[in-house]
Image (cartoon, rainbow, N blue to C red; front, side, top):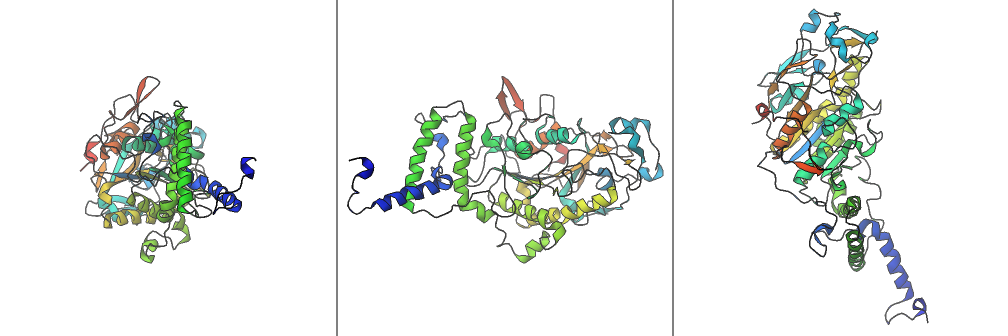
Length: 490
């Protein structure tokens, strides 16, 4: 008699056996690879070592005690105009229409370049510090004493793709680890049931660099790649289990696939992508218990939702992502990147035409939610331990571009970003551009200086955070000397 035709043991039926395996199959994706909730596959090989030769996502000890424990980055793709937001330049009005010859070396189309263009927006000083903000930022300006504006950022990349890669990874080339991957590599995660590194982008449209290029791990082990979570609907496709399983079947499936995955992985020690994939499946199973709760805003008060602008069409989408970012860092996520809405184009701050109208629209979408997040973190005593980073891949030129309703071309020689929380000295400005806002001339801050400073706030020494790749000790801050901008620190 064949095994499949043998009679079932007493008390069991064929129908129960078929049902057992059918239900186990349904649970494999969601639960089977979640081998344990307390420990990872990485530490359970026969030798007690990581069979794939890669690190896990457990919390790591920093190089020293940094004040920041997590990061929220507002990445404003396209290049916000510094002279219209953070860096007032009265001289532009005095010299309106003039075209300094030395300014056209960074213009995409010299024929389209007009003269100097004053900002159409008024600036005023705010807070006890008297920090100047444009009238386009009425909500953010109420947080003036918590913000440090760097006015002297510069980069060599004035095309969007290379500029974005430079600001994300310190290199203008593809396949380089992003800031978030480096942070996760250095510090791991405080919550093994949520991703250490999360990207919240437009839930409908893709950012300019498709897919994972914005939050890639590059040459770091794939486990450090960011996880894109959707801000509407289920956080991940197919995250929720289709049917709940009885504990006995759940434990059986976990144990079975634990052994299968371990044997498969040990036999392939040079496949870190395999290890990362298994870890991702495990994480997805654990996320069934925590991610839905983290991404569910229904338990937030009506006042909180209104503060973030969830009651207004123009701010609802970005406000939702800002509120989700607070909930994620509250639960131990190490770094959250928030990307701008891209429904009107993949570069929402790329205002080559009608800078007046387009800049208003971009600020209307983001100003209230960003300010609400700062205040919410502060009220919850989380701002001191959360580093906030705002900026794009570059700024804009102080020149007019296009006739009619003029815009501004890319400006990489001098632009503004701001930081808050996490050990940053609020109510300060650092560095200066020239009289027209074209070139950083005082206390210049390179992208590598910027990254070194962010890592320092997290307790990481940029010179010691290295990964050997092709025989070289690679760093986020590059091989050239980079400095921590200590004047920004408390």
